[in-house]
Image (cartoon, rainbow, N blue to C red; front, side, top):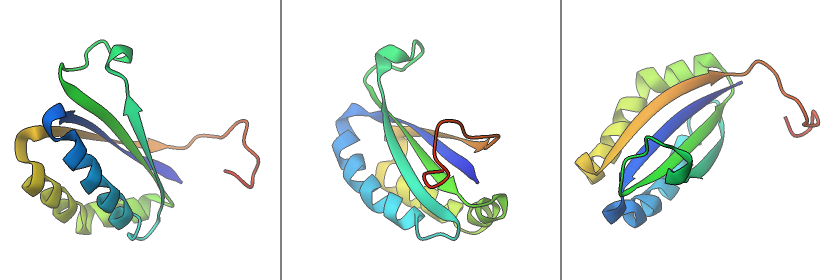
Length: 113
């Protein structure tokens, strides 16, 4: 299991439109092989000293079954998914991505892990 994380900086003028779109986008992402869950977080600008002004900050973390599943997504679907978002919102947002590889879990029962 790993986390595929997407960090978004969204212009405040479009954040409601993008939020509505992201509801659909997340559901579509979860149709790809190995994508189990998506967590959508709000990041408070006051918690991030380098946060750009007048931006809405979100992080989406996708729980993915395996590196093979993520590699398949990146090779075969990522370009289209990113293109769809860029087509709708062009230069009104910035996205950065990273991959987090699980080392261990503490404090959760096996049923919830």
